[in-house]
Every structure is written in C-alpha cells, then in structure tokens.
Length: 164
Image 1 (tube, one colour):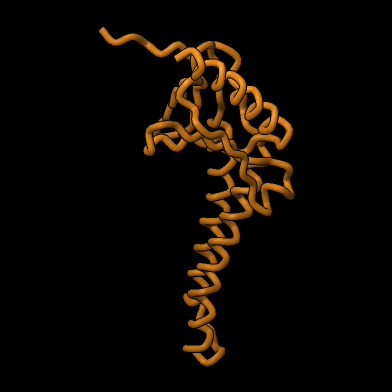
Image 2 (cartoon, rainbow, N blue to C red; image 1 turned 45 degrees about the vertical axis):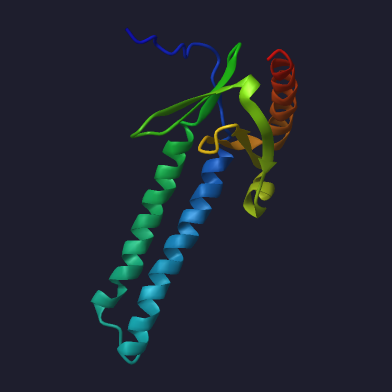
C-alpha cells in the first residue's frame, strides 16, 4: 500500500503581488493580439470599420479580464512547506502538483526577478537538483523572504550533503 504524503503544517503562501505582475503580463499580451488583428482590418476597410471588425479587440479585452481573474486564483494555490527532510512545493488549480525537494539533493538555489518583479518587490526562488528535469520554482516571494529562505536552504542543504 502506498504511503500518503504528509502535507500537514504551516504552508507559506506567495505574495498576491505576483498575481498583479501576472495580470499585467496577460493584459499586455492580449492587448498586442487585439490591436495586432484590429489595426490591419482598419487599413483593409479604408478607415470605414464595420462593427464586426472590432470583435478581435473586444475578444482580446474579454480574454484579458479572464487572464486577470485566473492569475489571482492561480496565485492562491502556490505555496511551500518546510519539513524536516525536504521542502514541499505545491501549485495548480485544475492539476495539483506537489514536489518534494530533499534538502540534501539541492545543488543550486537561485533568486531571479524581472523588471516588473523588482517594481513590485517580489522574486522567484529556483532550485536545481541533480536531476536535470526537476526545475522547481517558487514565484512571487517577497524579496526579503526569498533571500532569507535561500540562505536557510543553502545552510540546511550543505549540512545534509556533508552527512552523505
């Protein structure tokens, strides 16, 4: 019989500012698509746009609003739990994903942040382990939390590796 994963404890959530960053990216992306389809229609119709020609821009606006809502809902599902032997990371609304990263297997812990992340004071914590396929990321951490967590995980990982 399979052993169940112990997920009890104090789960830490990421900052909701991450949802704002994701929402801005979604709005910009859909704005580019909507304008990119609507503007050529304006030139094709010689400036006399029929009502149907605005549909791509309206559709892009609706999808941008859906993207904003989805970003806030998705951000609420991201979290991490520090356990005695590993770090457990969860994410996903429709498809839940739990990844346990053993402290002794962590080889590199990296903090990254793009321009919007810096503007909102958040960062991403990336873990690299011996397996190349296990790229675990905790997005949306406050900058100070990311630095504190990185330092703690590096310290614990080094102590666990010396015991191997």
